[in-house]
Length: 128
Length: 108
Image (cartoon, rainbow over all chains, first blue to last red; front, side, top):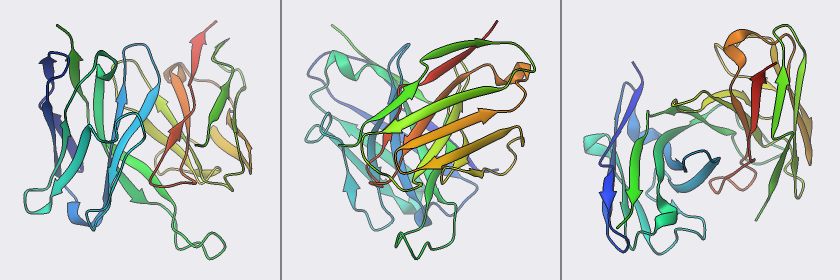
C-alpha cells in the first residue's frame, strides 16, 4: 500500500526549532518529487516547500531562510527542518507525493505533476 | 506570484443538485490546474488534474474545465459524501504552487 506517515509535530516556543519527518512506503521514493503543505486551523492550504529527485529545493517567501526541506532516499524519508518558528507557523503539516500524471506534453515542454498521495498530517503549535 | 481566486467561498446545496465552483488565476496558467477535495480532519484528495482529467478512482460526476485564467469544477449530482471543502491548485510554476482559498460545500 502506498503510504506517507508524518511525525515530529508538537508544541514549541516562538523562535524555537522543530524537525518534521515523513516516512514513505509502497513506492519508489527516490523517483518522486515531494512537497510539504500546511493548514492553519480553519484556514486554507498553503504550499510550504518542495524537493526534486535530484535534491533541488524550493520555498515560498513566507518560509524561505527559516525552513529546510531534505530527503534521505536510503531511508525512504522526507524531512522539514523548521527554525525561527513564529505563531503564524502553527498548522497541520502534510507531506505529499508529486506524481507524474500525464505523458510528456510537447506544447508545454513538461509533464504534469499532481499531489496524488498525502500523509495524515502532523500538528505544529508555536506558542509560549 | 500567481494568485488563485476561488468562488464562492461557501455554498449550500441539496443532494442531487448540480454544483459549480470557479477558480480564476491572476495570469494565464494554460491548463496547469488541479482540484482537491478535503473533508474535516482529513488530508486533501486529488480529484481533477490538468484542468479536466479525472484522477483514477474518482466518480464521474466530478468534472473540470477551463484553460488560461478561468476554471470550473462541476459536480453533476451532489451526493452525501461530497459535502466537503474544495481547493484549486495551480502548478504552472511547478514546483512553486498556489492554492485557491477554498469552497466549502454544505448541506442545504
